[in-house]
Image 1 (tube, helix red, strand yellow):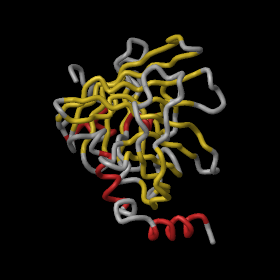
Image 2 (tube, rainbow, N blue to C red):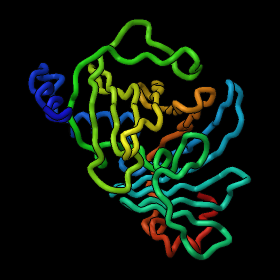
Image 3 (cartoon, one colour):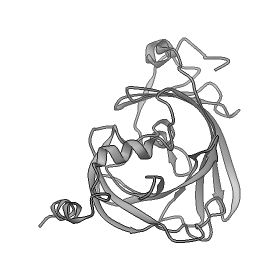
Length: 258
């Protein structure tokens, strides 16, 4: 029996709460990272080496329905650069060029943070899969000061997700959601070859009485002395104009003040 067929059989055998529709589970998980359809996200990415801060970058990200995102680079060394995501396509726009450059979702921005990691904050539009099983939630390693282990063990749904469209950052994801509220805890992120590219840990904080994912920690198996921390400094409802999501129009607009 193939691995996916075995997972499907296991999902049928699980209790009803664990065998929930995966699409519904992902929508619930997405709500912890993206509380509205159109938002502005102030993002800070930090790269640590041997526990010390090495570099940091600032981004303002506008997200709209239809898998549209615009990343404005705010650090002095990158000011004026933009990344546009339209469905499965990505463009890099440089301030001195009139020609948008096609890039991929896996292109690195800083450390282990790729273009897709910053531009996309949802799973439900990009992945489908099965509930593999119900397990004790993973516990973050002790060398992650941003993420601390909970005071008592929690139960998680372990999802095996495969890409449902081209152009996504990862071909496969093993995602762990806290069973009670579907809060994302951890993800193992795989490339098309089947190799694990990195692991992600999600750090929640209470915002206006609701749990929100306010940081994502990215770890690389090959370089264990490094960690990349993506801080979501603020996530507020805001709809950027539709003309901002046109690569031809963007090259003529500095978006000063945005």
